[in-house]
Amino acid sequence: MLSVYTRHYPPCAQTDSNYRRCRCPKWMNGTLPTGKFVRLSAKTRSWELAERKARALELAHDPLRPPDQPNALRIRIEQAVKDFLEDEEARQLAKTSRAQSKTLLQRQFLEWAKSNRLVFIDEISTPLLRQFRASWKNSAITTQRKHHRLNSFFAFCVENEWLLRNPSKRMKEVQVTVQPTDYFTPEEFQQIVDATFAYGEWKG
Image (cartoon, rainbow, N blue to C red; front, side, top):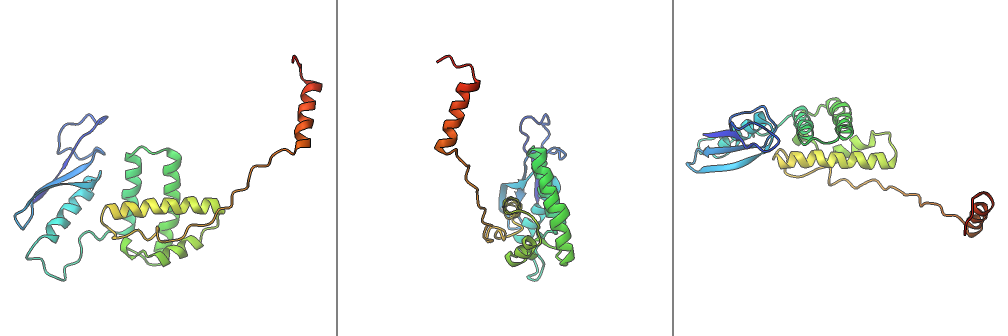
């Protein structure tokens, strides 16, 4: 059986490896049903998620597992969003960045998923994400930034082995046209120089 434990790092003051309330990385070790001993990172700071991953790993290596038993790692969209936001908080990202993630994922993405009757994160495909992006009423630069934030969220899902690939990465980015900075014409520049002579205290 696999057990979850915590590897504490500064500034965490805890030393007990069984302490679960801090945001230090969680690990798993123990013996699989096949008899093999393993020690590996759970790739999460959430004790509850690490426990789910430990049970799923045991199930995946159980020689008596029924072939039609569903994947224990299949996760609901709400839980994936919750874990992502908690991870951003644990990494102490800027409040403005975390607020933008909450707006996009909690207020927009979850509502869109519910309206489309999507429950599990592995039901999200690239074509569906294109529909989600098409519902945004933002400027090109804001749309691009929100797309990058989606990339980060689904990369997090891949890292936690909830998805095999990142569906957001397969979307083409919105083209953003950057307006070049205007420069003074030679005549305008000369007028500025003349004005410094006329109104400034010239000591040259």
